[in-house]
Image (cartoon, rainbow, N blue to C red):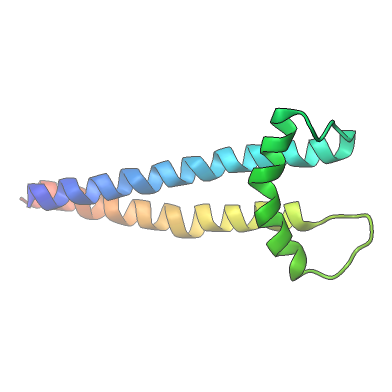
Length: 108
């Protein structure tokens, strides 16, 4: 039982790591929004990296959104999707795995 509990604990820690990576992606997404406001040099390596990392996701979101002219709402949709994924999916699975792991350790 302890082995199964530790395996579930490892999966819970992987879920926690994935949630942390999504938090990092939110910061990169925020940097993308700021870069679009200040009209930064597109040949700057940092600006190029931010664009390469965020544009595939934002392009998919824009494809399904109505045209709003100059106002790009796709980062807001991306932020909302990340929050929903983190709160509903990752937190639920993490707490579920942690509770099962702890009950197996206590019961075993």
